[in-house]
Structures are given as structure tokens and as C-alpha cells.
Image 1 (cartoon, one colour):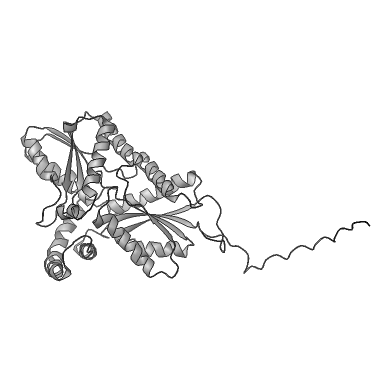
Image 2: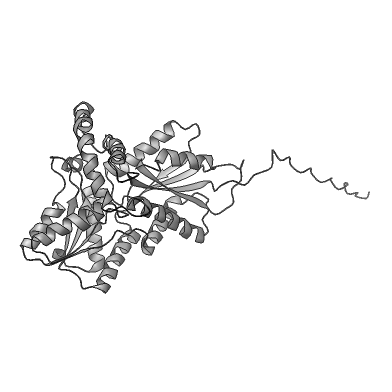
Length: 362
């Protein structure tokens, strides 16, 4: 009995256009989140921004019944004009420094990840102001992103910053019909790449001019009560400083940690930055190098409060040389560190293969 092969099957018909896989945007997104900034250095823009910022119960932990009359009856009437004047002193032709640097960071990180073969949509958003987190997350979902890694640009965790960003993320998820897979980074205060970028910034500055008598690290302050309630912020700031001191091989008395931006009459983390600088000058310290490791990008608190006001205070008390070292901004070592950090938190998600509509999502 001879075997007779079956006739060759006729070619399968091509799928109809409605059933064919269609290429879409990468399924994975990285969202860099910063604090926020007003749209313009005007009282009206500051009033809108401050109303949103100071209405966040994570930022002001005072009962609403007590806080609302203060906020709307006093602060939003008096503070916008004063804050607008401060913002005008640092405003750039391309707008707010914080907005400009954060956008450049997102673009630079996207370039590094793409060069590494990662197919990731990289965007940026602000916790307060624009582009708002919810609006950007809506855009990412509409673009086909089904997995989102949120990376707040706060190296040290505080409830008022990282915690508030998590609140905004979860509120957005509550109203989403299809919630993407979500991951978020809590902090990276001891990340080797971040600390290395800080050290590189200091060393580059010291190559251009001799080291000052003191290197002062000014972190944004939070109320002392936050520490008592369990925020790790103070300890993480100290850990960052200790690691940086080790990288720079500095004696303990050469590097100081202080806290700035105190608001209200309550006790905040100490020592305070400006009083410390005044006291250093009175003690005969003639030169200081000052940097703000808790800020990923230069903003009002670094460019006006430190580079202008704190400088004036130090010089007024007899200091002679005040060097402000810019934030990491779009420094190459910092961008590489951000990309490394993102890749570690993206592990387990396929970010190298092509993505098509209708494909199974993990």
C-alpha cells in the first residue's frame, strides 16, 4: 500500500483589516514626576498654584476647618504677589526653570533608554500645576500604554512629596475603567548612581576653583512632627550626606547638613540653613560651597532662596565667598543614574519586544 500525500492546503486567507494586529505605541511608560510650578510669574498664576499646593492635606497637616480660613482669608490674598516677585527673579526665556529642566530630564532619559534598546514611552508630569499627573496618565493610556512606572523626582521619601504623588496616582486609578499595571519608586536616597552624580558635580566644581572651607548640603525642610509620625525623610537626608562625604573623602567637620524653606511657626527639621550660614560667617568661616541634593532640578527654592537670599545672608555677616553648586538638572551622570534606576524597577516587564494591539498583556 503506497502512501499518498494529502493535497497541499490552500493558503489561508489574509486576515481582514479589522482583525489584523496593528502596531501601537510601546506598552510600557515611565513617568517622571516633579513637584510643580506656576504657569507664569504673576499674582494670578501664583494664586492658582498655591491654592492647589496648599490645599493638599499631605502638605499642610492641619484640620481643614482651622486651615481653610487661614488659606483663603489670608495666605491667598497676601502671598501671591510676594511669591510672584520671587519667581520673576529666576524666570527664564523658556519659562519656569523647574519646568524646563524636568522636561529636558525626561527627554534625556528617553534618549538613554532608547539607546539601550528599551521601547518605553517617557513622559513627565507635575504634582501641582501643569502638565498634571492625571492628564498625562490619560494620554499614556490613550496611547496604548498598559504598564506605567512612576518615578517621583524626590530622592528622599517624605509624605508631603512622594506620598502626595502616590495619592494622585491612586486617585487617578480610582476613576479609570481599565487600570494599567502600576509601579512606583519610593526613594533612591542611597542609590549609588545618584550619590555618584552628586560627587561628580562637587568634584567638577573643585576642579574649577579650590574647595571652600565648608561644603553645606541644604535639604528642603519638613515639620519636626513629620519625623515623629514616622517619615524617614530626616534619616534619609543624613544617609545621603554620609555617603557623599565618603565618596569625597571629607572629614566629618567639612560637610554640614541643614534644612531650608521653613513655613509657619511650628518647629521644622534643624539646623536651619540661613541661620547656620550666618553663624559660620560670624565664626570666621570665609568660604562655603552650597548644594541642594534633595532637589532634582533647580527651582525657586534653590535659585532664589539659596543662590540669592542665603548668599546675601552669609556675605552680610562677614563671609567672603559663597559658591552655589547647581542641582543635577540634565547632568550626564545623573541622567544615566535615572535610566539605571528606571531599568531596575522595570525588571519583569518586556520592554524590548514589539507590541501590537490585541496582544496578550501580562
